[in-house]
Length: 396
Image (cartoon, rainbow, N blue to C red; front, side, top):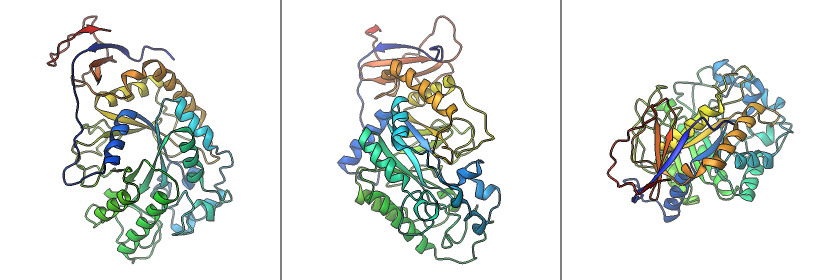
């Protein structure tokens, strides 16, 4: 990989930093320590994988193709990821310079990628593969020292008790009745399994709240359950709003914090929690054989650095194929990003957003007394930096 993606130099200054906890919520000491780790980690892998991968058209296939529940139930018979190798996945993550994985335990189709006892709608009971991929991945993450988060969808197009239905899922063929609180109990029972049977879990990454914005989601009860089972586990929710009590980090979908280029974050406000931005390597989250709009390594390295300059982590997504392999276009790019991180990772890992706000020419990051200046845009030979209230000792 060429090193022309970013020009980097550093300045030494005197500085200090503090961690502020969220108002109206008192996280445990283990949770505060986990937040610090999270902010230092900076780079993670997002994985969208499920029975929808068999259709090779993304994770919203059930909704977009208007497949009713009875039709969709045929898919697990074709999902047999015999080429899945958890050790290879985790090794790839480490080689890319990533520090954690966030994987879909259950997406909007409601299909559980683990051996849940709450329903037979899961990978062990319904597929010829018959194995718990989350258990394999959790064991390998613990073995290789990679943290593991579980993505979990509030929204569920499969369960009849997800009623009244929200903005999506109207073509699933479910009956026009259901017990909303029973569904929430079901969700909490599944979360209990994930936080009890898979060792240390770094956090829960919620999505789908936006399907029923006015519903009583019982977030306090669910968040309290998570923190009781694993006090260090970080709770985040992709609800596109300001952080709510009980949440430990804030994510931004396909946008840097404070931006709204996608239209997802018009109701969002940047809070005081650790931040994360997530993005795809092409245009899709789940495996999509038609999507060849791959972002270049330089584009993704610059996104990673821009996230760090905005005081956020970068969660970069892959959608594995139904056989359990990750497509070569993704593995190649991740390997190249890893090579860049081996050389310049000190300007990303353990840093916070720098003293100079992001500009068209680039961003700054800071660690201790050192400020890193990342030049990414076209600029003159001479760059004028605004005064940031610190005395520069030397350029390094």
